[in-house]
Amino acid sequence: MDRIRIIGGAPLHGAIPISGAKNAALPLMIASLLTEDTLELTNVPRLADINSLLRILGNHGVDYTIAGKRPGQTAETGQTIRLSARHIIDTTAPYELVSTMRASFWVIAPLVARIGEARVSMPGGCAIGTRPVDLLIMALERLGAEIEIDRGYVIARAPKGLRGGEIAFPKVTVGGTHVALMAAALADGVTVIDNAAREPEVADLAACLIKMGAKIAGAGTSRIVVEGVSRLHGATHEVLPDRIETGTYAMAVAMTGGDVLLQNTRPELLESALEVLRRAGTDIVASNEGIRVRRNGAAIAPVDVTTDPYPGFPTDLQAQIMALMTRAKGTSRIRETIFENRFMHVQELARLGARIRLDGDCALVEGVERLKGAPVMATDLRASVSLVIAGLAAEGETTINRVYHLDRGFEALEVKLGRCGAQIERLRG
Ligand code: UD1
Image 1 (tube, rainbow, N blue to C red):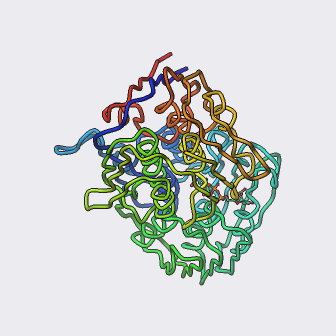
Image 2 (image 1 turned 45 degrees about the horizontal axis):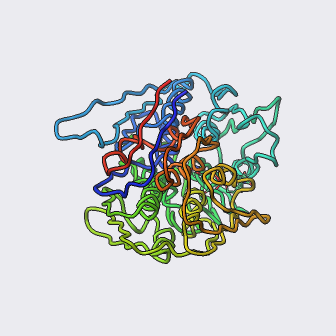
Image 3 (image 1 turned 90 degrees about the vertical axis):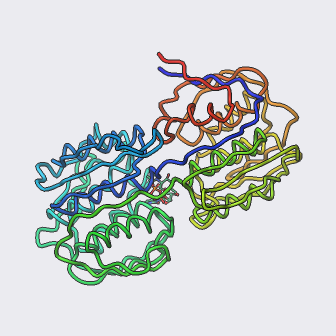
């Protein structure tokens, strides 16, 4: 199993190209199931999760090609993937495939909308409630799907097609909003989605669906209105920049000090996180080329952060800001409101010398003078990258085990950081 070795202490200087957003690319790829025509996606990141989803789509009968590089393209240019779901050969998404990635459950929406049936394993095989998909199911029911739960599978049927309806989410859910959008696009009549997620990835999916012929108004706000159409056609769409990758590298620079230009990304995708970084003492300047992040000499100031749905501070950057705050001058308070148990990184950060006390959904982080390198274990995608950030500032050597978590969501991490002066390498095997 691969490991990452970091020798901490070097400031970061240079430029980091930001990849296309994994969390946008996944629903966009799933949207290919809505049409017989070809959907071409550009700027798709090279990540393990993308490959897992390609396997799942392939199992449904989607033909895909991944285009090679063209003249003028660099190593950083994302992939172009063409997906064609002309013939759906199987409407079942089996446990072995779905359990590797939760988002693959979302195939249920285009399958039931276009084919009239879908049989999709519950993610992780857990009961609804503990690892819930209840709101996704509710959304489909609102559009007339009949739902049956059988031996770990959710079976959705709508032999006469879906019909428009009112979907009011009691809680903001990104996956629920993606599912509702895709299903409503092909439903008969008008659907109103209330308390919709406002995440940029939702707006990106809607923009692509509109190119495919869908009639959608209000994406990016909490009320989305969809007028169903009988068929969607092919389109070409560029995946938007990854705001979580952007925020992660911004926090890495804030941690080590230095001066880095984050290229091909946009500040409006992560204003709340950039604002927190400014409060922490980082200089952030937006330009046409991207976002320039600098911290020269100034101490890291402690911050008070609460995760919230967009436009609030993203839960997917919570572990990273915590890593940064381990070196702040003072005590920070970080509250997680989206997911329970999303503090698995705390114990590993403590192995590097961090002082963190958990109190319910709050973490109190008392900044320390220095972190010391140690072997640590990646527990999930965002937790593992917080260990990278901490390792970059720790004295001596940090080795991170189980980096397959990182490969799910961060493209060429060690290459991007290494080019900016970090002493970081992947140990194969
Ligand atoms: C997406 C992101 C993930 C991010 C999360 C929150 C992708 C591939 N993943 O995950 O990186 O951390 O948004 O920004 O885009 N919930 C229910 N019932 C449901 C569905 C969700 O109770 O049926 C709850 C969840 O347990 C959680 C909250 O709603 O507490 C938000 O989850 P949701 O926005 O749905 O997350 P995902 O779409 O799975």
